[in-house]
Image 1: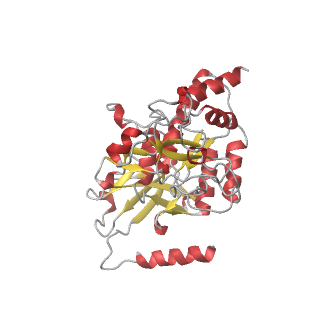
Image 2: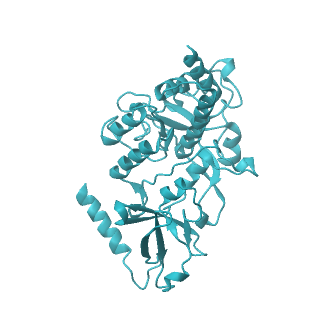
Image 3: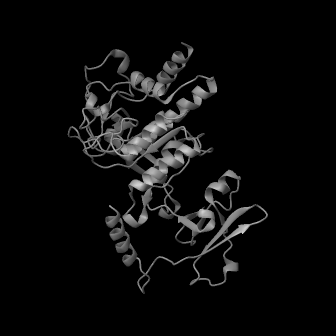
Length: 376
């Protein structure tokens, strides 16, 4: 694996070597310690375009430290008025290493927008949980075409644990034969079921349906995670995707047949069971959304669909659930919340459990179940 990584990085280095055809700037990075704030300061400048460092007004701080200190101007800047590519900095090893962080695509911003976009003047642009605090942990490596690495995933879980997050969403994954095995599965178990308070971990089930046993890793193969399938309602079927809306189906009880449970699963949404016999898909949530994307795209929003969209929708719903439980002073554990979510989900009539799991996440029902269990 190490040899494969070195080979990939060597290839990327050759492809991005400076030449007359280079389009990306080479940045000069200057780091110093600000004695007045006892904080690191960073300037990342395109010295070829402007050799006078004094004219580069954007001074960055370590992103995490700047956020904790309530700083705003030092958290991020942008590369060029035309490119609008946002840039932040992280300082490691007592200043020996500076990491310049940019997004390597619009997927992560879109996912974050579904969870917790906040638009006080337009409720339609808000995410599912606009009052949440988002901790962004980058696992995609731009040098590898945004692919994640095992080391990146492990570091992300360690950071999430240290940050004390309540809910995690992972809209990443690929096919795998082995279930609930390996370093990532072990760290996930520790994060969810380790020392209190633990966390609720959701992930996309995969986009390789509609065949059986097409669920991907880690969302549908790691036991500590809730794998989320992608649901589409009848209105979206015709208006957005040219899908045939489902006919009235006699399946399901009368209480379960509502306008919110009359839809179907997207054809691409991966199906269970997992290769070890597990369900694979735990629950389902809406799999299409119009949400924010990075500024460099020169678009405010974009429509995307996939289990990468259904998972953050469910994560935002769980954030609302935990917020309500905390406000009510109701005790809970990650396993108790998971049981409540699975037991109170609204099943889609006529849709196999291998496709939808327990059904659509129902926050109101889950809250009542957890609160009642706490009273007992």
